[in-house]
Amino acid sequence: MKIKIDNKTDYDTVWLRKIFNRSKKMAERRLRKHHLPIERLRADVVYGQSLTNWTGGYAYYHSNYMKLKLMRPPEKMIIRNWYCPTLKEDRVKAMKGMAKSVAEVFIHELYHCYGYKHEDKEMFLPRKKIWIEYTYNYDWTEKYPVQFKTEKPKPVKPKIDIQVVRYQRVLELLKEKHNKLKRIQNQIKKYMNKKRYYEKVLVAKGKSLKE
Image (cartoon, rainbow, N blue to C red; front, top):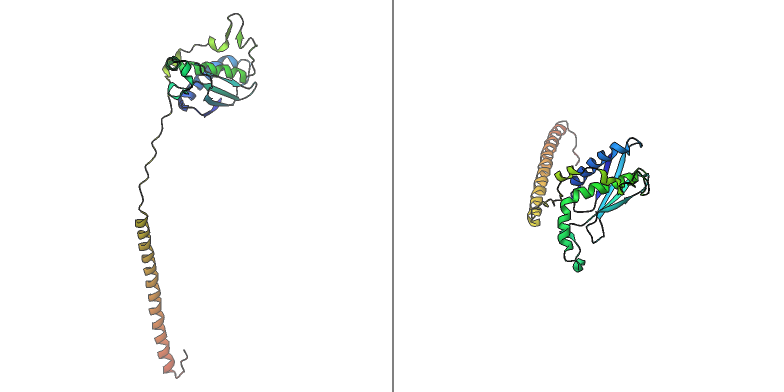
């Protein structure tokens, strides 16, 4: 399965792809027994609107599309959270387990892509009363601490002095015109020599010359 990620958040896309690929392999070990693999999957990643430390999403049944809604990093939180002073502190703690949260949501939505609904026993285990994604082992996510996009420094364009540029252009044009003038002067010299030659020949033969 190839995964196309449209990432509209500040989370690093390479980091997300590593988690998606690892989660996909885990889920497909169970799903492959009953379903054909999805060849191409599109995953849109955006920020969720919830004010809690919540990561979720949705997917269409029997499709190759899902959308993951990730919680905003603490530094990207909206200021209106004034009524909950500990929310930002809680979110800092939640960021430590962000890789696990992303993996759980990805597997949950992947089951929807394969056609499973919440009421299906393959998704919700009635005996344990938990979702299927909580039965997986996520110890590996500890190796993937949350990473964010790094802004590439924009190349500094050298300041161009337009007058110097124009001066250089004038010099190029002058050189071009001088070369052209030299060619014309050589051609005039060549034809003047021919003119004198034919005048001498024609006068020797007594022929009249007409300009």
